Each structure stands twice: as structure tokens, then as C-alpha cells.
Image (cartoon, rainbow, N blue to C red; front, side, top):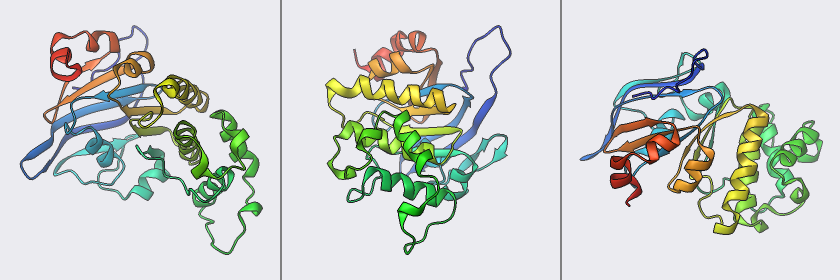
Length: 257
């Protein structure tokens, strides 16, 4: 069930296409013939009970897991079981629940490390200060409203800003698609909407599509263009947030009201 957006205009271009994905862990079926498309320019939310297979899907799309069956194509190119580094270079970036930062380095040093890796110029003996992309990395920090923290130690930032810096690092890889696992997990409740507002605006400005796994239905309602409901290894429903989140079966099995 791809759940394509409904529009009288030309259909949006498919960026990522998953077909017949199957994977299980012992007796647990995490994906049972999953078909799902991700469209250019959208923010797709994946929701479902804990253990349903949502994060497993992100891991398959980024090369961390190999499915037992099925295929994943990105920009019409087969990427199933390609290593994560190859998939990243093709244009898919990943942000995890816990920000992947070097806590003892400054925020800008973290960004410059990402730039060095992107250009395949990583060298332990080369000073970070000499990396040519410094201005570009500062501009990305400005995009996520974190430039004022560039000289701060990354480990000293509050969780919301750590998440945003992690997104800036992902954007430094110049992706077309960003996959995120609970982007506001661990962020103080009072800061969640502000963090997500900045994040979604940054993705729009950078023209990056996204898929995010989320348990907070307020976040899904406000920031997703489309929602896919994952349960017992299958996609039970996909479509606009209002339609999906008001479905009685989704309310009963996922939202729990």
C-alpha cells in the first residue's frame, strides 16, 4: 500500500520505492510484504505500536539491515543491501534517536568533520580549522538556528539543540532524503514544537524530503504531509494525517483512545 497523495496535478515523483519487504527476528515478523513509496517534497510520518517494525524499515533503507525478501530503490536505482556509506553518498541521510555527535568537540568542529567526510578528506593529522567548507557549515548551523552555539562544546548543549545540530550534520551530506527516528525524542515537552518547526523549515529550505518515525500524534498531525500506519509487519493505512488519524481502527490499535 503506497498511499500516493491525491492531486489533480501531475503525480509527484517517487523518490524511494520499497516493494515486498520481508524481515523477521525469530518469531517476530517486522515486515511482511511491505510496499511503500516516498515522494519528492513530502514529510512522511510512520506511526505504529512499539515493536511494529518502523525503525527496522529505516535500517533497511539505509543499509544497516538486509531484508529476507523485497527491494528498495532510490531515484530508480536498486539500493537493497548496499552498505550505509554507499547509500549516504547516493543521497539518503539518517538521524537517530540519540544525536550522533562528538560531545567533546565544539559544534562547528562537528560540522567540519562532516564536511571532511563528505569530501573524503578525513585526515587525523589535518587541522579542522583549515577545512574550506567552514562558511558553508556555519550557514547550515544558521539554517537550524544554532550558529550562536558554534564554539560551544556539543556535549554541553540541551537535547533540543543537540538534535538540531545532528540534523545540520545530516544536511552537510547534501541528501535528497532524510530518515529520522523520533526527531524530538528526549526533548523537553515545552521545546518540542519549536525544535520541529525549525527542523521542518530547514528541510523545506534545503529541499530535502523526509520520513520520520513518531509516537506523538500532535507532531504527526501538525508536520506530516502523509502518514503510514505500520502494524504487525504490514502497512494498515496510508494517507493524509486527518483521514488516517481519525480512522476508528487506527485510533483503536495505534493511538489507543
